[in-house]
Length: 369
Image 1 (spheres, rainbow, N blue to C red):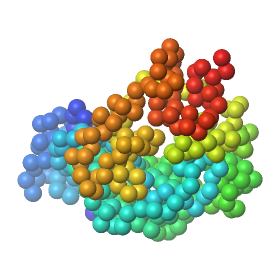
Image 2 (image 1 turned 90 degrees about the horizontal axis):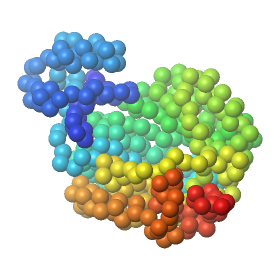
Image 3 (image 1 turned 180 degrees about the vertical axis):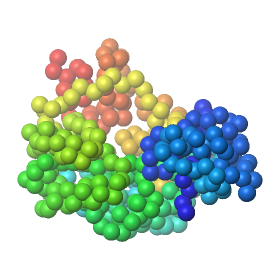
């Protein structure tokens, strides 16, 4: 039987989490050591059985510690989260996509296994598997299973088009992600299929959504708003509400990761939202991003410089802190800006907007003044 709980070091402490579920129980160093050093015949401590019952409604009293809880080792790197693009290929051709040209490219299995081990060594507890569309990747099942078995909490970002396939559902119910994040591109075939440029994609999404809901997979819906579907925002929210799924609206279209502006015309100017003031982040410090070739960067936006994790291992991640300092510092036309305390655009994203020759009003507080 797969492990029911995971005990893991975490920045400034230790956590116990349950695969397939949100939430965590913070524990002290002594209780972490008790779990780590438990003899093979030990039973689960009563304090943990009580916490599991209170937090997740499961009865683990009297269960053996071995096999019930996976104890992650201490790490000297301090990375809690990572995102991994398993492949940039996609079965959609969305007109707003920040990836631009979506080329099928990725590592073979030995490379992926090596990358996941490096992530585990770095302390990654929460791992986002993304793409492209990750569920169409030929090695997705192996990648998901290996990461799950290593004690990572998996979140999958998907368009939902493959969720009604039995093999996919078997995989995700045997090794449940703590969340499926599904992108919704419209409430009708006309808008959805038009935005994805794939006929029948709305019907596939709805079938996948219904199948995942029936399988009781934890989900969240990201409503992606463009000038094509802005009038359907209430109807898209109603789809999420019908299934009892939390939804979030994303109204700002970003340039491609290469600084291309070809996606920006899909922006709905009426729905353009002022971002919350950017006050800094821990990109490159407690989390990082890995592309399909195992090259790590501070995040999905700030992709240069990169660290080759297959060649350098987890030690290479130590260089990301300096990269973050460089990338997140104001430069170019932002140097000396008197409005930076109210600006909602981080420097890597601002650089992409400038490279894409975007109208200033879509990313700069000076826009329109």
